[in-house]
Amino acid sequence: MVSWFSKSIVALTIRMPKWFVGWVSRRYVAGPSLNDAVKIMNRLSKENACFTVDVLGEEITSLEEAQFFLDEYLAVIEAIRENNLDANLSIKPTAFGLLIDEKQGMKNIETLVRMANEQDLFVRLDMEDYRVTTATIQVVLDLHKQGLTNVGTVLQGRLFRTLDDINHLEMELGPAADYRICKGIYLESEDIAFTSYQDIVDSTNACIDRMLEAGSYCSIASHDIPVIEYAKSALESHGMGPNIPDPRPNAAPLRNAKGPGYEFQMLLGVRGPLRRKLAKNGHRTRVYVPYGEKWYEYSIRRLQENPTLGTQYAKAFLMPWTNRP
Ligand code: FDA
Image 1 (cartoon, helix red, strand yellow):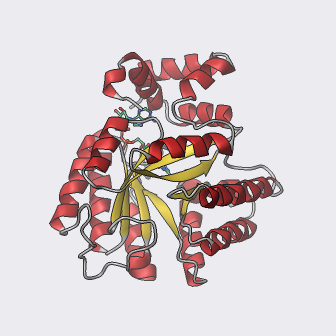
Image 2 (tube, protein in one colour):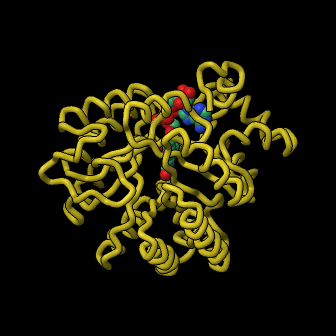
């Protein structure tokens, strides 16, 4: 349920001038240029964070636009190498054309994953709304079949289908499946998704359990204490933890620039103290760093897709002690 308060904040924000939206989103978006993202990563490296870089933009309207993303991500790969950053890439499959022409979208993604592979970099396919869930998973399966194992997907705890997706990916890829598990930002219909807070948390936690049992790499992407605490105890029950080589007999070999079978991930600007505490306790923590010229469209779209963010933004600004960057 989205409260009237959240809806009002969203309605108000999208009517505000661009500079105001920019002022609010400054905390969550590195800036318009790659250089801004590099600066933030250099700063947060001192907090023992590693990164995943997202070029803002999604769902293109013509296939030509996909070239922009290919070029920009190529520049990101170069910047990661030049600046010796501990970072990988996050991409939105629809920005590569997956919803316009699945075959061509897949080809575009393959081009990027190959370029990243040459530099030993991992590519995470962000999960967008239900229209592309199956196609996104299929891209990962097809790329692994071609020997490109430096790619993994995101799964969303709120979707009913997610446990079946994990079982399917386990059957196809074995422990080479590499996930980011999150609650899911898109407020999907109750025909396909859990809608109450507790059901979403329980389902997300059940997915973490399945991923760990399957020997997969599990990136826990949440700022929610019940999910993080659950993940920590699930890891412990598998004998996993900071600086312990992954003891699961069915685990895939350790990959370059990854944690011991798991890591925690958080968004730029959200719950920094919690992230720093996890890092201080030795957990690998990755910050999602979005940047790009399309910061305005991105910020507005996120608010429209998930009006509960309105309350979170307001809380972060009005009660800063609850959520520092
Ligand atoms: P919850 O929403 O309950 O938040 C817990 C607390 O964290 C809030 O009370 C608030 O204090 C703080 N908080 C969380 N989000 C905030 C925000 N945006 N601004 C301010 N405060 C905030 N989703 C998806 O569908 N596909 C994807 O590919 C990804 N990728 C992704 C990567 C990473 C690294 C993260 C951390 C998250 C995603 N997500 C995502 C988003 C995810 O699905 C989910 O919507 C958000 O993480 C919020 O859920 P939490 O588990 O943090 O809990």
